[in-house]
Length: 164
Image (tube, rainbow, N blue to C red; front, side):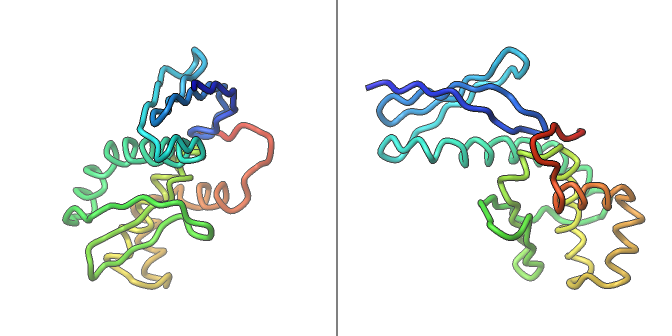
């Protein structure tokens, strides 16, 4: 049986109309004309609630793939393993000893600069484990606009479009 539902999707700080189509084990999101994206995936037992986390993970992964090379070269770091998860109380985490960072998939809902801010934040933990003076000095040096994006993530404006 085919199910069709209409939704509003928050992506990169904007709101888009989307249509979700579920048929058996397949799910797809189709967006209004202003967003030229279509997303298809398989669903476990046709569970439509899994479509949105998978969608946000895919969008964030695509965005991070575009940015990571620049930052690794600028910071002179080897490529860490990057994971994506839905987290309730964090935007990211870093395990320097394991060479791994994890980013919250919900970052795809916010302006692109927010995901870059969290990426740089986690990469800087390879230099300084704690949020000390040296950590923020390095942050200021490499990504001076970070306070703007930190504020957007901490105090998102409700029911308004966020600036990119």
